[in-house]
Amino acid sequence: MTFLTPRNCFRICLIIGFSLIFTLWVNSGEIIGYFLLLPLITLTLLRWRIPKLNPTVAADIILCIILAFHFDYAQYAIAIPLFSAMFFGLYWAVFAGLYLLQSFDPLLTTIFAYSALSGVLLNMWHREQQKKLVALDKSAGKYYALEALQSELTAALSQVERMTVVAERTRIARDIHDNAGHEIIAAYMSLQTARVLLDGADPDALELYDAALERLNIGTGKIRDTVHNLSVVMALGTEALHDICRRFPKYDVAFNAYGDTTKIPVYIWNILEACLNECLTNTARHSAASYVKVNLDVTPHLVRLCVENDGATNPTGLLGSGLRNMRHRATAAGGNLSVDAGEIFRVVCVVPLISQSV
Image (tube, rainbow, N blue to C red; front, side, top):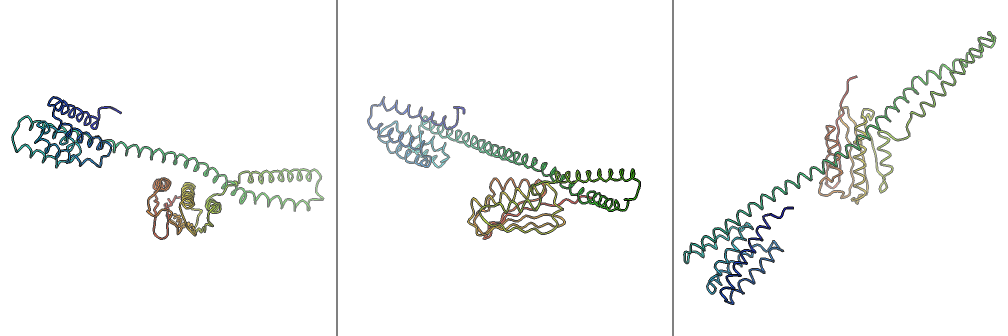
């Protein structure tokens, strides 16, 4: 951080001002100058440590005016609290200039005007610097939030890819089992039945028939093994949401699903799982709920996940970082996430279903 800041410049000016008053006091040799400098320096140091005491510059001005009747150089000291007041934004201190009405002094007037103008300029510089710092903090906050969201989306993308592969393997295994597998097994059983009717046939033909039947039996076994290997152990879709609710340690979560869940694509299941995990985690950490209920509603046009409890999970309704990330993900998919923090705390995630023409 650079040394040349408005506050440092303000302090340097005060030190110079006090040094000049101290020099005038020493040259005058009047003891009353001590009673001027001591309270001025003390209050100035207190204001450096406690900004709430800034309005005490009024006491400094009054002290200088009173002592000016006994110590000639005290009137020049008025410039110090006047300068401080302008820097603090206490512009009412300009009324200290009324002191000049008793007798016009060009030098004193110049000192007052220069001090006030310098304080105002330093105040403007300080406010401009504060605005830049606030803007910088906001930019940094947005940057870190964007980084967190990017990390979240990267993890979500990896999970979506994994779930897509798993879903495709499951579909292939189901198609083989339900279609080709059933037909091949039915043909194999028919051929086994027909074998009894061919007992009196040519031995060479029977040998070829048995060899083909054996190869068909081996092929059927390989198809069965392939279907078994393609099938996944992990839960998908509604089963995954059920599994998350079952593994929730604190409460027995009531889970209900309505509608045709087969219409939900993999990337939406990923959003719903992440949202449910986040909601249940928040409930476990912050809620004093007596129940937790999860509803999944699927219509021809959208899917709606509602997680609710009767505990004060988030009485203000403000979104934490986890729910904010969930809202970003829902918004990226064209949906939204909302929070109702009434007597029943409710988080609702709605994502549209994009119809695809076959």
